[in-house]
Image (tube, rainbow, N blue to C red):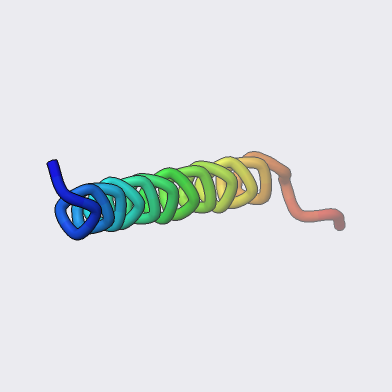
Length: 47
């Protein structure tokens, strides 16, 4: 494998890791939002 090929391979690997990281970040944000929403809905309004 030449230097060019290894650079291209590492760039592709980095892009995949970035995409995976973004997906995990979005997923965890969605879970947090769902939990916050659920905890707000459960509380009965004060009278």
